[in-house]
Image 1 (cartoon, rainbow, N blue to C red):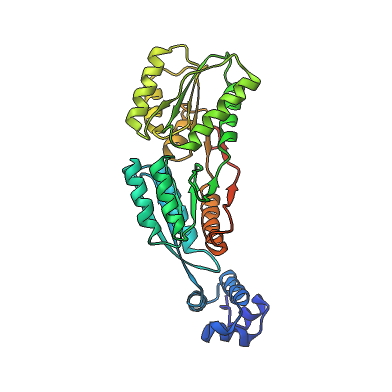
Image 2: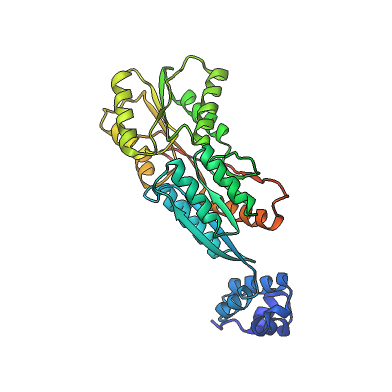
Length: 342
């Protein structure tokens, strides 16, 4: 097959041959939308000089220093989310993005606050996953006062300044999980609840939505007090083992927070019951396997590619808009998986 030539590229992009040549030799003389159109066409037709065009276009784009601070990198969800963000930033059209992506293993408020200030000083816009705490709020305000916008991911945060949010409607997540129990459990009974931390506001909102559904639709269920796993698989396993021992008549378990691999291990060590339902959070290898073998009945999950796109887009928007533009709020739909859909 004949490889595409410059005239082919000009035709595909809807521009003249001289415009394509100027993109290659002096991209600054071509308007940004036109440069982007030529680059897009080059990618679509497999133009042999795609690398040269990408270099020419990107060399005349402003560089945006974006920072993302996630929680423990040992957790598969955060590794996958970090990979999605890095790939999205690298392939972003129309902007040069210099991404600083860091994971925080020590989740004490002091360490989280110090890291927020540190990464905020090195970037033009910052996105974080963090617990709600006065020290964290002060750190966010410190960053905001330097003119660097802050976006909270997964769970909303509050401080004196305006903080944007990108994530799911967590109240709706909780109500959806409750709907699953209501429809799948044969006889209403006790449901155990695990959360990662009571300071992670997304999980608090999950629980609030969970309880509100049952108050409205089926008060025959008994919802046990939520137990914090502190994002630890070992702690989650201990909690589940004790719940099953103390409440042998328990009909279900809602795993709304971290440590789900430990909860899955505890459930697998217990003889399977056809009348027991478990609903988990986030789809990755372990939860997929648990759906397949019947340990989990349903999983609610972030669509990571869409999440990453919304994260980068929001940071760019808040940076360009300036500190007086107000906070952005971006929510999107979640994915629901069953044993038959994975």
